[in-house]
Image (cartoon, rainbow, N blue to C red):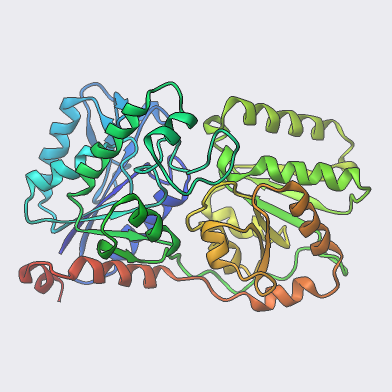
Length: 429
């Protein structure tokens, strides 16, 4: 059985949960007898040195079955590619590989229209689409957060989308929905890493019977790490994410300011992440100004440490420096891979009470939940984490191993094989 995985970015070029999961799946499928996986990951202006004159789809770093889709002239209004030669290259790529399954993990930088192109080029192929956010529903980066008041959005419509993005008329968003649904109609099976997503897509009008929940999974880590703090207090917090608006770093920094204003300074926050160039200018300016002011303080008076980006090989060392992992996301965080990473090392999580974190974290059992976007509520949770005797030990004891990569691979293989032609299933038996 040949499986082509189509991914937004390669995690070694641009870090992010969706691309990391696509890569983990690719690596896991390589261990399955009878499965021949291929990875096609997009690259764009974030990796300019990889673009060569006339190149459209290339190999990646000499690795077998790993390829880059060199995205050009992408139209964000309609989520489609504008370079016809690149579309032709994708068609030829499909014809060359002849996969039994094409598994899209995104369409951003690739094009939603590649779904129907795949169906036209390979009429019998099984098309699987994993939703890592709500970009097909929500043109505001797929976050479903109202730009009018920063509240979570539960229903898209032409007028509501126009209110968030007034540069285009309501008619544009009406047509966009029709365009998206037309191409999504080519999909045989949709998968989601969190169950709550299914109701959102069903309410939007997609067939709920075509959805399957398949969890995200990671390679098992080593045994849980001991607490980072010495003594009675567990007062070291870690943030692990891209430095973009939706991840809520600004909420965490506001919580730090509130704790200081209240006279509590016996804590440390370590920030681990990059890609701040993806943040809005306003948020980027706020974050950079806060960190600049922090660096002016004497070392002993700093509560916030900025460690910068990290590779997966560095994750254990970074986790060993903190007691808690804070997930202050201000959107419907879909699954939140960092929760799995935290649990892998025995770290309780303090997270916003919506979306994937609310589905995964049991408040008072393996972590703490606070009101989404509420810096004061986060400050209270952090103060409690630092001062309540035995809380860290109780919650760390409640942490269970997160889903493994093997579980995820088995879940997707079951999706692939259902209703596949007999010859493809026998090929891997």
